[in-house]
Image 1 (spheres, one colour):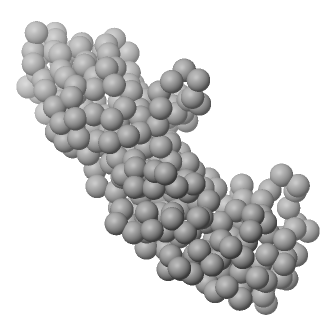
Image 2 (image 1 turned 120 degrees about the vertical axis):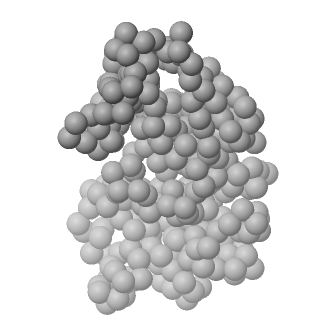
Length: 293
């Protein structure tokens, strides 16, 4: 299974710590509740020391290591975490991705939150890598959508990059995407595009969702930057790409699966987007093999 390259010449996958820490802190606060880890506090001596290995129970692509580091650091900065496989690394079942050592209480208290992030985000990266592998040899890039877990968007989009994909617009404020309901509300594609152009700055791109080739022609005549070709079969996608002729970026979307994505990419589109990469990707199972020292 492939993933994003880890070469020093490649852009960093990691997010700045200032973006990661608040999300991990909120998860720890949720878990600790009103009284903290009462089980660990009751049964584990305060002076007990422990070490542990975070190992994959199945193959996948790693994402979320920064969340692991933050979880242990926030509970006890003295816990030592050594990373053996960073974000973007393809791993086999049984691979140890990190080791931890320090206060047994701290390790046990941070364990579940650290693993929750690692399992969830590695699942996103692994699913993305599967689609990237399936379209290898075609021009299409794999991207996510805004169908992310509330509060986890930055992390899940980071995991998309770890799997070799790229991000669609991050939110409602960094790109115009005129969808079917916008078109209905505006009174047509041409008027919607014209209004958008008048309202936005020169750095913002405009994309329009189309369902038919007739709608595509209207969008192209309006001078859009990109077209979202929604739920089109490969033959129709190929015809759409021919019509576009390089005048706009072509994006295919709608019910994309690992089994269908190669045929979609073969139609010649520039981008293939799949919302399920963030809202339904199966988690990758990791565990902490713990021992007192």
